[in-house]
Image 1 (cartoon, rainbow, N blue to C red):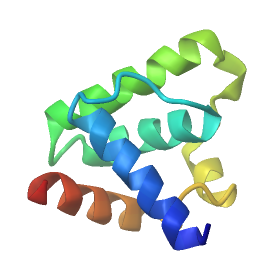
Image 2 (image 1 turned 30 degrees about the vertical axis):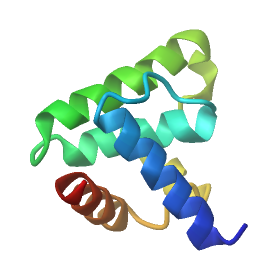
Image 3 (image 1 turned 90 degrees about the horizontal axis):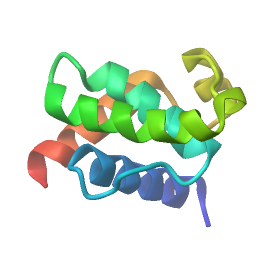
Amino acid sequence: MTARDKERDLLNRCAAAAKGELMGAADQREANVFRLASMVLRPRLPAESTRLRVASEQYFHQHPAELVESAQVVRNGWVMSVPRLRDMLTLQLRLG
């Protein structure tokens, strides 16, 4: 699986959580990306942002030690960049 494939899959999971189709994150990576996505979507898509935040919080309630700072999400390579995450997820949510 290429980096682009992984990114696409993660964006699809983020979009599903943002739409309320997915109730929680599957792992640490998803939970932290959902949390970051909720922060960057808040001004533009507040309802979707809330759903992502709740999905991440459910995971962190069970695994509090797995929460990392937003900058660490990028350093870990879980997302390429915050603006890219925001733009690609916003586009996917508005089109889908």
